[in-house]
Image: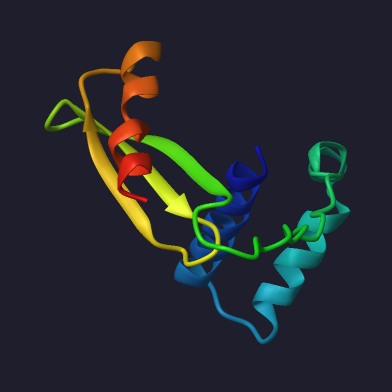
Length: 113
């Protein structure tokens, strides 16, 4: 919803710039939009929270991040495993998005390390 409001605000400013010109046109439009009751009613009240850093492990392959990545055009699924210590990625192709293939996927990677 927030992105839609930003797009509408930018389109409103672009239309105004195409048809008329006066100094501080953008600031005037932004002030008008901010005073609009509908805009303020639907304005996003969520405040972005700061990122919470995670503790870095003391040795490689002690903490891993895993995600399944799909290439829709090729119809293939991959398991991406990243070591938190070295940020080294390992990628292996999966047979599908089943639980059994997700369990079998990291086994050869973990056997190498």
